[in-house]
Image 1: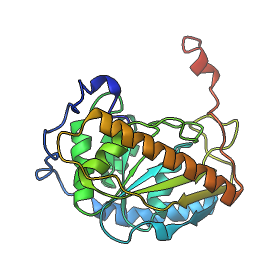
Image 2: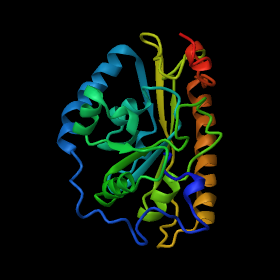
Image 3: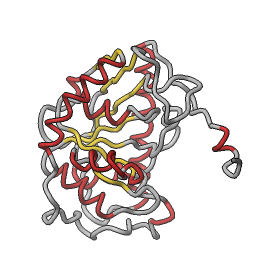
Image 4: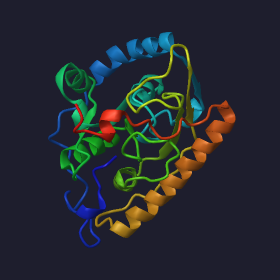
Length: 257
């Protein structure tokens, strides 16, 4: 989640949102009907193309608000997390994905558009609405596809946990990108993909003002817990991380023909 960049935080009090809990009463209800309809189809499609194994589903609380905090290595991470989590899951998705047919499909499924370049009050309110409704919210604290080791984390997951009091379930995703692939490539046919849910932990619910230092402290805790969980998941599954995404030639030389 990339809405909480350090340059926009002022001198200690988080800026860009309501001074109390974000107001959600006027937002449309999450589109559960679209998600219920298409989630099984996405799950079938993923299982037909790859060998998907899910571990630790018991760690996801059966009811109440939950934040899934996952590492981010490939384009399949979001679809896999939404399809294989037993409960209906709404994810924060980069705004750039909400274009054309894909964007309409994401909106139909009730996923949340996120502006990663600046504070996005609308995305914050919609995320809080999901949690207030007792649903599951998926976030990728790294903010972008990476090597997946969670070497850094942005502050959104910590902020949302402090607002809502929802427990955080770390999720390690392995196999959605192979070594040497670019960030937009998918693994080969019938390759293994693993989703490993870890034990939930909590961040104290904190009333306004939620100070920058406190959010930063809990962000460090979340990053460390998720990074440790990814290491444990590699040992459990025997599947390593793919390393940094391969950079294509046109990305190195954008002005080249």
